[in-house]
Length: 589
Image (cartoon, rainbow, N blue to C red):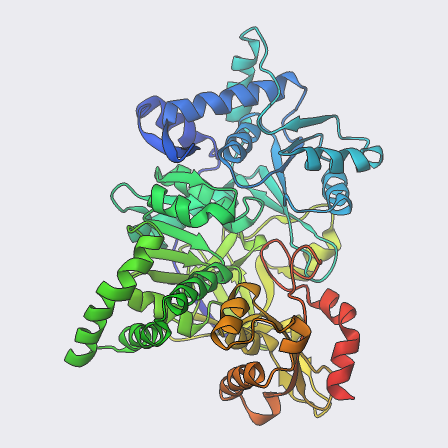
């Protein structure tokens, strides 16, 4: 058994809560810019005082509507400024936020609101309002449905103001701040009880001890585009408020490139798929300009430069040339000021990590779960070890159990599952949270995730195979969107593969195959050669018994709309296995 701990940089007082920094900054630095709001084609500064006043108005409206301390208030919207205002207003009123992904189905909405006992819900659109209305008959505790841009009205008298101060002061670090439901990749979502201390301790220790160089940049800022219903984005929201880092919101990924160019953040956070899309987009643009070969050489140079402990003169000169020709344009595409990005939610892949590092954007890969208030570990700007998920954040201990499972302990560990003691007992033991992931710790405390305990595939020959590393390597290929390793109880390992719709069209044009349908493309010799090469490169990283023997290309991609991906783009393995049972059977027939 191996264990590694990092001492806490910050401890949270028992009386602390998430609203303290917001209101103290408004009093001490009222004119300080803390947010930027989308305003037409540009951005408008929001001061600390302006933000606090908006939060207060909404909180007073909640109190007037009958929301009591400890009541749950659901929040269903895309990522936008009003989401953060509502979140802090709920806390200011002493209540508990229950986020719902804005893409959730009516049955998912009914489950989360019903299970949490939410008394009210904020929604963003007519579609959301209709979805809530369709299930409201089964939600007797739901008293209010508000539009996020039309919050409840504040009272005309000043009585609520004093009540609000009392409510804020009554919330302590051990009180519940939010119930975040898991993405449900393996079954019905469970509500994770996250306290004020969980969020404060994790945010402040990350700011002060792990990512100090990122948050302490002069005029530091970030543009948030991940769903705020997810714990990763939520922690960054809190972290920016705590650190005084300027934050912007963008709800529509179709405008992301333009928003990044105009907002000009100093750091980003994203899931690996976003970085893959940036890479693919750059590759496609080069192909459209007839510069595919130049881009490939530039990409290989960036990777070699990142991997080299001490680049030689020739490599440095090559890198300098491509910095002017290629890399500078990539940096400009994300605003021109980004020096670091934090990646979480899934494995990034070493090649992609080295590519961006060589381009001049250091991606700091981290690891965590909803139950751990996002990060358990993250790479350090001063010692970024690509291929690992970094060291435990300050205040956290990581242990590798005898069976290889990663355990974590610290102030970031959730209080338990909402109204589900049995599930809580299965994952919490003596303060240690059992992540369900398999990993390794090196002598310096750097953690590497090698698989998922429950997803281990055991072949008919008795070989244990972790699908994650194989899938991560395959997805690194520009043409591959998603993949799923199969073979439990079978003679060999197989794989389902989907093609990236954005990457496949330029490839078809480049190879004179524009007329081919997707069905025809899955049997095209040139495409199969590309995928064969990707599979062979992936197999080179594992033993013969673990290697992929056969694969099948599906005609359609896995998407959230088809029910095969979670809102954070994780494959719902159980759903895919069920829906594509025939295709899987064909691999072994």
